Image (tube, rainbow, N blue to C red; front, side):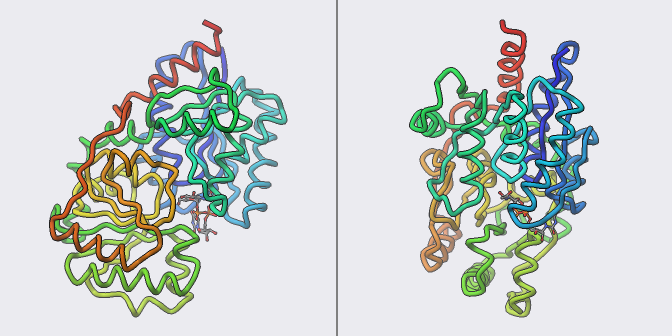
Length: 366
Ligand code: UD1
C-alpha cells in the first residue's frame, strides 16, 4: 500500500483537491489518499463550507496555522507539516496551486526526500511582486511530477530547465469540480436571496493586495463599481482582507445602494452566481478560468495573468489597473459588445482521473 498526503490550505485549494480525492478512490486497494488542511484559511465561510459543498471528508490532519506575515505563516506550516511527515512517512505529497501552504509543504517534503507532485504547475504571470508567483516558481523547481493545465505551462517549465519527463499536460482539476457540481446548482436559492435576475447582474470579487491594500486604488475601484451599479445590480462577496480595508479606509458609506456587499459565499452558491452572471469583474486566478469554461464575460483587473489561455481562447479581458478603460469596457459588455470564447484543450472534467492514473503508474513503476 502506498501513501499520498494531499495538502489544502486556502480557499482556492479545496475545489482542486476534491476531484483528485474522488479519482484516487478507484485505487483505494493500492493507494491510501490522506488530506492535510494547514488552516491557512480558517473562517467557516472561507473553509468549512467548501468541505461540505465539495463532498470532501474531514481532513485527516489539521495544522491550524491561521494568518500571519508571509514568513510567519510559511514557517508555521513547515514546522507542523514536518511532524506529520515524520510520523506518517508518506511515499508522496501532493500540492495544488500557488498559495503559501503550497510552497511551505513542498519545501518541507523536499528536505525529507519525499516525492512532490504539483498540480497546476507551470503557470507564470511574470510578476515577481505577486507572492503567488514566487510560490509557483519555487514549488515547480523542487517538484518531481508536474501536472499542467494549459500549454503556456509547458513552455514556461521548459524555459526554466525542468526536464520533460517530469511534466504532464493533463487539463484542469478546478474545471473538473465545476463540471461535476454544475448540475447541482439548480438547488441554490442564492439568486432569489439577493433578488438577482439571470444575465442581468454583475458579479465582483477583488482581494489582491495590489488592488485592495492601497486606499487610493480602492477608492478608484469603488468608483468604477458604483458607475456599473448605475446600470445593473452588482453583487460583491467580500474577502476578509478587502472588507477590513474598506472599513479601515472609511469607504463603507461611499457604496452605491445597487452595489451589494456580502460575506464570502460557498462553492455551490458561488457557482450559481458565476454561471448566471452577465459580467464578472475580478482579480482572482481561478475565476478567470471558471468564467472561460462557462462562457461568461470576464474583466480581470490585473496587469498580468498566469492563465493566458483565458484571454487567448476564452472570454477573459485583461485590463490592467487602468480603471477608466475597465469602466468603459464593462459598460460596453453590458451594451452587448461581447468577447466570444471557447473552452481550452483538455478542460473536459477528467483531469483528476488522468492525474491519478499517471501517479499510480509512477508509484508502481508500470
Ligand atoms: C490567499 C492566497 C491567494 C488566494 C487567496 C484566496 C497566498 C500568498 N495567497 O490570499 O493566492 O487567491 O488566498 O482567498 O497564499 N483572513 C480571515 N479569515 C480567513 C483567512 C484569512 O479573516 O479564513 C484574513 C486575515 O486577516 C488574513 C488575510 O485575510 O491576514 C489574508 O489571508 P492570507 O491567507 O494571508 O491570504 P489571502 O489574501 O487570503
